[in-house]
Length: 174
Image (cartoon, rainbow, N blue to C red):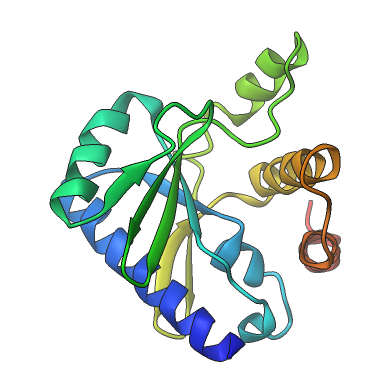
């Protein structure tokens, strides 16, 4: 069952990347396949949906692009993302990171993350080729996401595994 879910998510990510590439839009894939890249066996990380970060200035253009591709938008008033659905596809277009502090520290985090799209790295494995955050940016993304879940919905094993695999794979890097 999880293999089938992963295949559906991977297919919807490939379709999303085709749409964004054709439109010339920059993005990074948050968590999901980006996080699975840190696992010794990436195919073992369970996927849920496709979270991607865009330049907030391009939000309306990308929203129109996805609607034209048959996606239905919801949660358009959310503070950090818009959800897009169509059969066998669930996307979250982030224009702000989940878990962003709600105090003066938010500007420090935003300044650090300012070049996340420009510093993206290309990840290739299997049939998947996509833009992922640099390791330094991904560390912040994973920590903010864990904080968001810890304080709200509850933290899960997948969050802890993502962090553990990230630390293990990147520990030797400068």
